[in-house]
Amino acid sequence: MTTAVFAGAFTGAEVLVVGGTSGIGAAVARAFRACGAAVTATGATAAEVETAHRAGALHGVALSVLDVTDGDAVDSFIGRWQGLDAVVNCAGILRRGDAELDPVVFAAVLDVNLTGTMRVCMAARPKLAARRGAIVNTASMLSFFGSRYVPAYSASKGGVAQLTKSLAIAFAAEGVRVNAVAPGWIATPLTAALREDRERSAAIVARTPLGRWGEPEDVSG
Image (cartoon, rainbow, N blue to C red; front, side):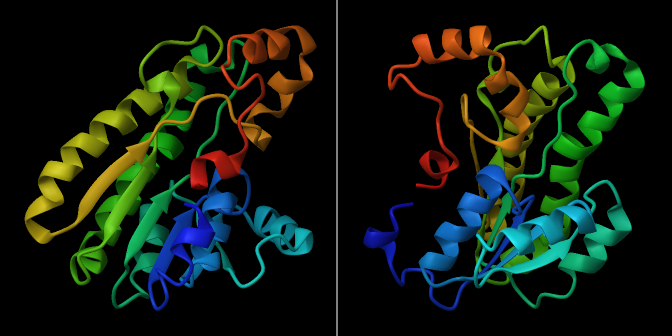
């Protein structure tokens, strides 16, 4: 969102950004805060939250720990709100190389990226319905084509795209909108190793119309 255009547009709104301590999630949290919202951003571990706190890039954003693979923790955490105006699901992991071909690793990636998104959506449903709020999930360009390097991540993001369509139908009668964004090559901690591979990074930049890696603010804007 362009904050100059939407300045004050979310004053009084309560927004939860899951996976909001770094990368795209952090950019989304900053954008909502700049537009007047009361924002809570979560990280999966205390270490992630502490790192974000020390970095000082989320001024005015409340930071909390939330493990989206723990259904009870998700229900308890979201249960503290009387209502929510928006929930943005940005929590995600990947394991490069051949790791994601291991069924155990495959399941672990889906538990965060796909089932974790579902857990949050279901827990937030009544809170969002109370205010006719909205959910934005994070899919990926890999929702639409495969990757030899991250098959579990690709499968999880394909699932997020279809989950979003399904929940948009399921939640519509309650006035809750459900949408997703599908980013491409964005410079985040998840893509750090790929960006350090000069040959592969150069190939990505060469086929990108803007001639550069995307920035998290390109998505939040």
